[in-house]
Image (cartoon, rainbow, N blue to C red; front, side, top):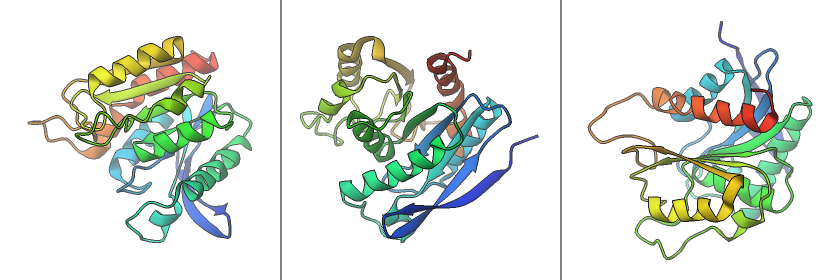
Amino acid sequence: MATPEARRDLEVGDTTVGSAWIEPKDAVATLVVAHGAGAGMDHPFLVGFCRAMGERGVATVRFDFVYMERGRRSPDPERVLREAWLAAFEAAEVAGRPVLAGGKSLGGRIASMCVADGMAATGLVFLGYPLHPPGKPERIRDEHLYRIDAPMLFLHGSNDPFASGGLLREVVRKLGDRATLVDVEGGDHSFNVRGHREDPRDVGAGLAEPAAAFVRHVTGTG
């Protein structure tokens, strides 16, 4: 039987944002998951991913950034994005399980910046890391990654315009044993494969197996 989802408000500065918790009995860890720039925490991709993680014994917390909660289209300033991330992470720590951080695109990048600056995540799970803007590989955003000691999993669509496969592989090589790259052949930034029409929930769920295996590895539970 699927674990029911609980809704909670998180305090972020002088406001609140919504969050969704899936906490299966005997969960080995909690993965906090942030959404990308253009879609909130209830996007079917993230819902499918988190439910599938729950089926594999990993609790998840997903949340909205303030701008998304308020119905705005432009992301918050970095300071506010980080503030929301830290609030969600600290709330997840209360359960006493190991806590990992990650997310889709922008959400995962902000998680990595927080970890580079001290947020004590056991590991990081990137669902499409935005290494550079589309068509601008010279604007690579990797400097802070080398300050991260926690293990990192990069789930990456091989046709992702936000992360040239060659550039991302080079970053992972530089990171050494800290980083693992899993390619989804033909996948774009949303892990959709041209010529294959698939429900976003199923696309997200399809990433849960390698993500859960990574979580169990870094927590020593599998």
